[in-house]
Length: 114
Image (cartoon, rainbow, N blue to C red; front, side, top):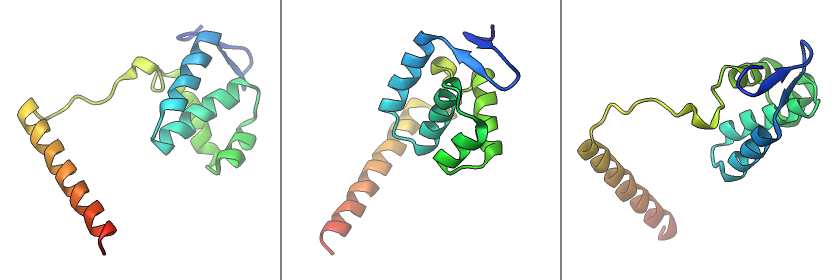
């Protein structure tokens, strides 16, 4: 068993019901299309879909589906996988976020009042 995954055959794998629920919830809350596709690839594969079927349904390359499945096996899609460590301190992060919010508001205003 690899992090809750039981490999049944060379081409199939099984995720626990708890993992499936966690992935379904994560998918429901996900706003990033690429992350959403990674989660869907894992869920569909665990439901017996083939790599070509998943690739066609998600409109991505078969190699990409395989990479998503392998990433999950390696813990990269794990809920607790985290992300990269910030290179900014709190003050820099706050300033950057303020800048993005200000610019975003300016863009929205310009779009609305053109």
